Each structure stands twice: as C-alpha cells, then as structure tokens.
Length: 134
Image 1 (tube, helix red, strand yellow):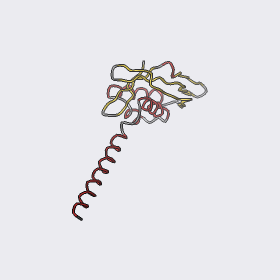
Image 2 (cartoon, helix red, strand yellow):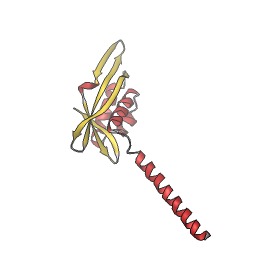
Image 3 (cartoon, rainbow, N blue to C red):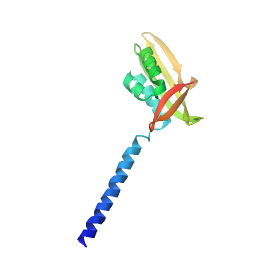
Image 4 (tube, helix red, strand yellow):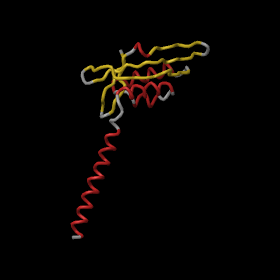
C-alpha cells in the first residue's frame, strides 16, 4: 500500500514540476509584439545599445546600431508612448505607436511623431523583436 502511495505521489510531483517548467518556458514568448516595440524604444531612450540589439531581429541589428549612434550624443525622452497591434504582414505583425521621441540638442529639440511610422515586429526564436518600420 505504501509503495502505491509513493508512486502516486512521485507521479503527481513530476506532473506539477512539468507544468511549472512549461509555464516558465512559455514566459519568454508571452511578450507581445507591441511590448517588444515599446521595449526597443525605451532602450533607445535609456541609450542601452545592447538591449536595442537584443530586441532586434537579426536583419535589423546593424540598423539598431545606427539608430543608437544617431541618438547617442543627445538627450532622448519618450513622451506618451503607447503601441498596439495594427495588422499583419504575412507572419509578421504591424505595430502602430503614438507619442513622441524628443531629442534635445542643447537648446534645440527634434520632435519625432511616432504616429508617422508603422513598426514591424517578427517572432524569432519564440521572441517578438523589432524588425524595422515603414
């Protein structure tokens, strides 16, 4: 009787452990396409080049470096950032954002209206990544 109880208990523990691992594994893919674009833009604001590259698809990595370099010497502020899915392009997701990037060059500000771009998010390796804009 004790042997059956031990086997049942071990079986339940294995099932629970498997469910926990499955949930943990799924956590990396839970970030949405709009959240990935927002994270990329926030990394631009905080001047985190590594994060920008990590949040980029393979095809966009070199462009992420260029974007970082173009904003590296200025103060960057995101104002009222909000992004949402706006459609599909094949398997990729289109993301529309509102808000502004304000780049301050001393006494002069460059204001980039985020509504003027549609961002492309792709799912690479189970992660949503920034992959350009139109």
